[in-house]
Amino acid sequence: MGARGEADRLPRKVYEKELFRLQAELVKLQEWVRTEGTRVVVIFEGRDAAGKGSTIKRVTEYLNPRVARIVALPVPTERQRTEWYFQRYVQHLPAAGEIVLFDRSWYNRAGVERVMGYCTKQEYMRFLHQCPIFERLLVEDGIVLAKYWFSVSDAEQERRFRSRSDDPMRRWKLSPIDMESIARWEDYSRAKDEMLVHTDIPEAPWHVIESDDKRRARINMIAHLLSIIPYYEVQRPPLNFPPRPPSKGYERLPREMQSYVPDHAATLMP
Figure 1 (spheres, rainbow, N blue to C red):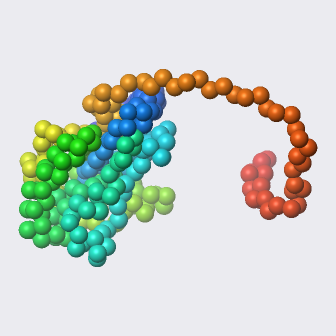
Figure 2: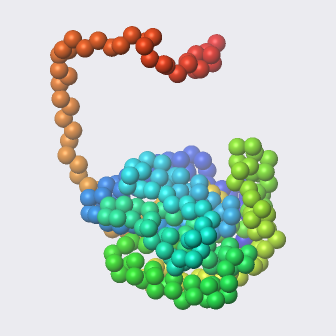
Figure 3: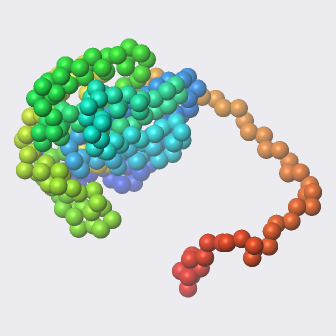
């Protein structure tokens, strides 16, 4: 599928209105998760520049970071390389009343590690065997596991890469691995197809998001997540603000006794 034309993209006003509605539902979902003690894991996978990170930002924008946290792990250390592959991910799984969003996950082994040769053939085959077992254990233990693959066309991916390279605020997002992904497009496609064959299981199916239009992708992903979790709106008790008590003689310390941040904002005024 080629990149969408601008005329095909979801209009901004429509997008923003629906996004805000869905984010309000996510807040309800959060309160349900906390009240019921549910454990939720959401996996975001896909090609570089497919829109995973920007979608995660919209998901968590109004959520409590103590309830919903993002896990984006760096390259494993030498010690971690000697551990059971899933070990460093297990420690980030949610406790009761928590939502964990994996910005890339254990599926690194089926993607970049496989394509770039960062794991052996034996390690890769072991992963394909163990991953469905591992995920079945998570679901069997009561964890809600949702897996999303963000699919972007080669033309749109390259357009986003070039846009980042010209933007000093986003240049940090580009790496040599990203450049390799252009040259190895078909290798990554084959790796993705093989991964889906082995890990698209009934207990934890893959959900593919077309992400050439980022607005559509965000809306579709959030709406789908909300549709597969049977949450309800938790009725919270009303808050009663107490009357402010009369002063007992407290006086604020003189300003000169404290170090205040300079008023940079004042320099912006005409």
